[in-house]
Length: 225
Image 1 (cartoon, rainbow, N blue to C red):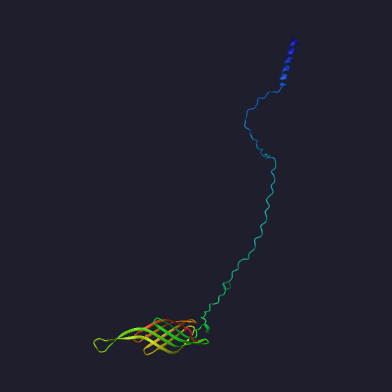
Image 2: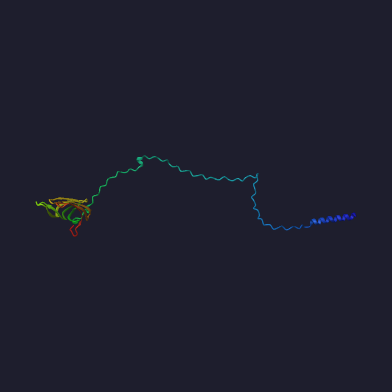
């Protein structure tokens, strides 16, 4: 009996040993979603590990600021430019070539004809042989004849004369005055150019009143110069 019990015990021990040495059957894992691998974090610095030394930034020295001279007060008398006082400029006298052309001139205005002769010698010129023909139309006036009613007399207001005068003429023109028994004349002319003279004629005629007429004259075509 003892031998049997010992043999049975040995068999039991072998069975246990064999069971422990056999491969274990693993249960297949359930389907789970794939998890991406975690990013490896940088290792934390240890409290005892010394911090890395960072070099201090290098500063480039600034260029020295330019030294400007201090402003100097300039006296007013030297600061402002000296301005010479303006000198009045007189109108230049035109040369002899700018005087009216020598020779016979003709022209006129409203109910007026004029003519004259210009003679030039160097820087001087003269005006002569002035002809005036003015037609003022008819006027009438009353004449006391001793009757109950005065008599009306018609009168032709006209000036037709040739004045034998000699008047100087310069760059400003000329002025002629004549006083007769029946009329008086003031004739002015302004030198516009060597071929144009503008003017005005003032007439005072007996029984016809006073009249003022503007005129213009030019050299007569074909006249000897």
